[in-house]
Amino acid sequence: MKTGLYIISPQSFVLSDFAVQLEQALSGGKVDVFQLRLKDVSDDEVIAACKVLIPICHAHGTQFILNDRVGLVNKVGADGVHIGIEDATAEEARKQLGEGKTLGVSCYGDIERAIDAAEQGADYVAFGAFYDTTTKTPRARPTADILKWWVDNSTIPCVAIGGIKHHNCAPLVKNGADFIAVVTAIWDDKDGPGEAVRKLSEAISADSKS
Image 1 (cartoon, rainbow, N blue to C red):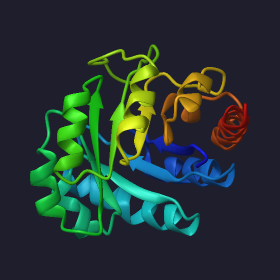
Image 2: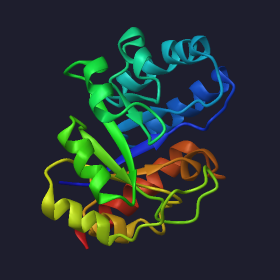
Image 3: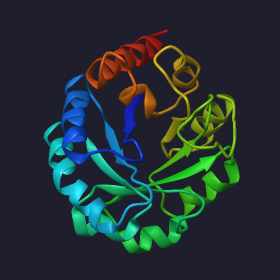
Image 4: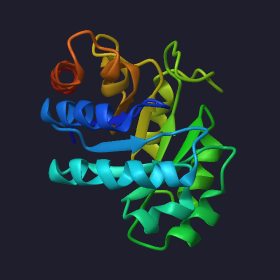
């Protein structure tokens, strides 16, 4: 299976401007998943963003995932939610979501947490940060070996995150990451988000074949 691309929003943005950027990003190549990660804003602001951004994602065949806010997923028509260690447990989130919604869980460098999440109904687990990142302070710095172990021992997809760019994703792809998750590599690229997606997509394809 070819490694997919998973892009995550900045933690704050002007909605009208970001809608244009998201359209550009999704037009640059195949993006499997988009995660809306808005911090320190009200539910109303998240709902307003969802109304604008979900149709853009679905028009491009991109799954729309909310960060943290399990209770809003069904209300806004999101495809699922991603939770971290400070949020609900995977079991609690699955009960609240019901079946048919995607549940992702951050597992940092913790295999045991990943195993527990999978047993509690997670659809994917995320490991990282693999490289230096300015997006958030990493809880762990695993090596790419953790991806290989997971792929060899589980059927649940895994996501690699943390400081990933088009020029450093090769070890993660080659060790079996099902998805490469990126933030600043998309939104901070001097050539724009569409070109950033194109570069990452090309790098992932090349690394998948080598």
